[in-house]
Amino acid sequence: MSDDIDRKILRALHYAPRASFRLIGEVAGVSEQTAARRYHALRREGVMRVIGLVNPEVHGQARWIARIRCRPDRVGPLAEALARRPDIAYAGLVSGGAEIICVIHSAVEVQRDDVLLRQLPKSASVLDVSIDLIIHPFGAADTAVWAGYGGHLTPEQIRRLTADRPPAPSGPLLPLTAEDAPLLDALAEDGRTTHTQLAELTGWSKARVARRLDSLESSGTLSYEVDLLPERLGHQLNAMLWLRVAPAYLHRVGDELAGHDEVAFAGAISGDHNVLSIVNCRDAEDFYRYLTTRVAAVPGIDGYSVSIRVRRLKQAASLIAHGRLVHPGLA
Image (cartoon, rainbow, N blue to C red; front, side):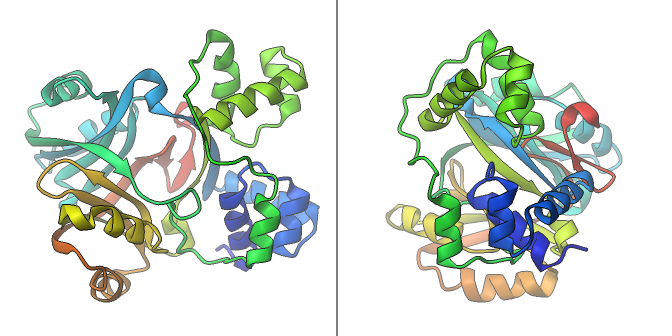
């Protein structure tokens, strides 16, 4: 079970995914060696992964969220097949295991049925499908991730971690080349791969690696994410809130939700419910408290429905195998 030191290390990585172990240790109140040892243990045990992600817009893609209602006795194989596809960014089972929810990367201009026809294997187990576009993610870089696991840092500690962080991406997105493939593949497996290791993998000099990373990061083409498994951090209940919000309140509601510690993602979507919020809580009572206090206090929400996740299959760039986050190629 992780302790406060582990949680401070995770929090430090949230603010600076590629920070040195020396700096992480200083913030967490431990030595550089202890910070490195704790980090590698968390990664080895599958509690967390730091990953480099390419913005799907580089390839002209948007994110679609699909709800696939299936026969309960046939849902498993279909869900596993979807989770292993590289163009599926998230997959999970909800509603007692009879519904798959997944996020698909596909071009925004295609018909919605075309998206699913290309992505879904033909299966008699599918009873009904709905798909909507994720229009806009809410929250700034510091607030648009789940922060409910604790390990909070002081403003001074956060300042130290972010002092050398480049400004927010300014665009335009950069096109990728074949030469970038080894670089991006390595970062997708481990977002903390060092410049020296990246130079060996690409055959470039460390200076060239640094320049290319700076260009990709500053343009918004490449970003880093700390992928966490909430269950291993004491948060057993994961839910999706499908909210109806009046347009005049949409941005205000979305940004407020994104700032909640319980929220892992908040975004505007198309469809009858126009805001999606993914929530991690300790248990059902904790979720009830969140609904009746924090969500209830947000003005502009006209209605909601809830999907409770019963099995997590994939998130970001990680598969969940035997209760561990793993790179898809290693599962």
